[in-house]
Length: 325
Image (cartoon, rainbow, N blue to C red; front, side, top):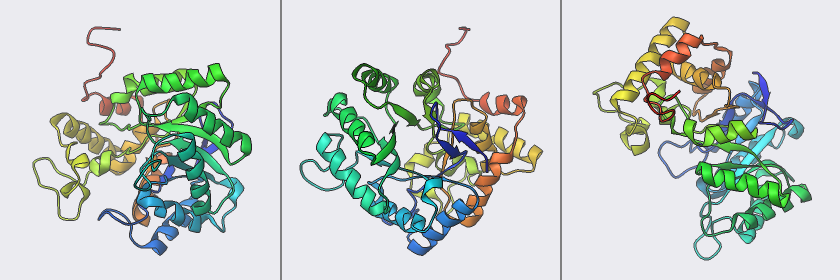
């Protein structure tokens, strides 16, 4: 495993982040076996992954609890534990959002489930239209001041919203977001003209979610064929929406590069992301030891500029506009 800095910070993170949304229960695609989930986290750490990402809303806290069990005997100082706040944690007033009350209540609950006295990276899961960003940033700033949180981050919002948050921090002298979680993969490139430009200009780390486009880029699906029973796309519209002519053309190039490099499509798709200068660490979501090791091997796969360009070429870029340099 190789390590890099998270944006302009001094924090060292592995070039792959282990996404822990799969750990818990409630959906057929999740790992419902708690012991197997803990074992997979341990294996990831043994392979050099020191960056783990979860959220309080994943299985209503179950994912955080599993992560807490897994890291209880680990060397805490080497790990970078990341979790999120915003989602609906209970019915009724103040059960979700980014108010000061909800944030301060939820950070304590997350700390308890994670079995730690500080969170390395605390992220807002979404933008909250109902709460002034000044209130949210003030609450997050107080968490850093108290030592319960070391860095703060954000996920999935418009470039305007993120820019507003960064500039508000600058003006009010609040702690600044150090990283962003956008949707980004070889077939989901809409953020290249939006959030990614802001992140690059502002020195913000980028940890993309769904780097394999819900499994589409693993190569397990075939053009014109119904998804096999048990695969995610059988019941998940998010993955089925990737079945477009343009996306199949990207996958064709990924498969061709995989053949050239004696690699798998998943490894090539991850390696393509790692070739993007703005990307810090894609968030992987393996559900087996085989998939985990396959993903980790992508870090050592070096693609040529021609291969990177071939994978990118089938997608119509949103920016610059045609004919604009």
